[in-house]
Image (cartoon, rainbow, N blue to C red; front, side, top):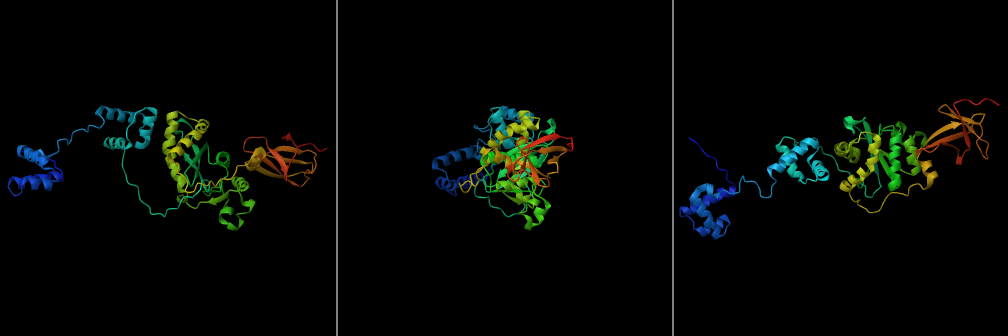
Length: 392
């Protein structure tokens, strides 16, 4: 014996029961209309359909029919094929953005998400919830920056593995980016100089306890945190700029920059792929414009409008003084100093150093020629190359 199944909503089942009571003479049609919360006229239509088809007459006639406002099967197939061809590892949100930007095809992200789930191209999972106490954002733009290097296959199999240096403002979430081969002092200094040139000098920087940013003595001996002898090269620069360095003691403490890294490892990798970029130099050429686009979408307004940045160093000499590497040497009896197997002759000059005095070579980060200083005096010197000068 065959048996058919009729799908009915709770409201439709209630209407069927009311109609049965009415046809048995237990209630008037007016009372039935009141219980079904419909007009008398509509109650008559319901009664007519119920008499003709029974329970089936009460089922909404649009059920299982395609929506008049829905997309066609051809459009859905086109979107699915485009996703498989060009965006197979993109999330629904990013895929929708790129389809609109590159293919001029508009589809809602939730629509695409449902289609991808139905096609087993996207999985929905629950993240493990960890109870943590929320830290408030800093209130002003420039109050505190977070810096971190993210090792990742940014260029996938098209180029070498690289590190993306990320600097993010805690108050607004604004980012600045620089790509390098490794997370080195050079890479961190280059990123900081870019930030200072554009926005000014921030109040503080929050970084992990890598040797690029902190020495062991600085981290573990709080009594020596004002002693330049325990500063890294990066800290010598931040000290001259008046930036307070704050060490982080856990990855969770740097949550702002860690979350930015995860977002970039998804979005930036795909952007570099779509643009066909396969070198670090080409990536750096587009990172400023990409960061501005990212900031326009994700950055927030600070809680307080006052800007915490201070004025950046003015003039070439000030910038070279702040953004440089320094090497200290003692003057020998023949008024020479040697650095990296290169001899330098200190020429005769007023108030110049004497043998045994300490001089400093500064190598500007900008790539300008290195120079020697004695105190605040810039010295006149001459490179003698790699040969030791003969005694007079």
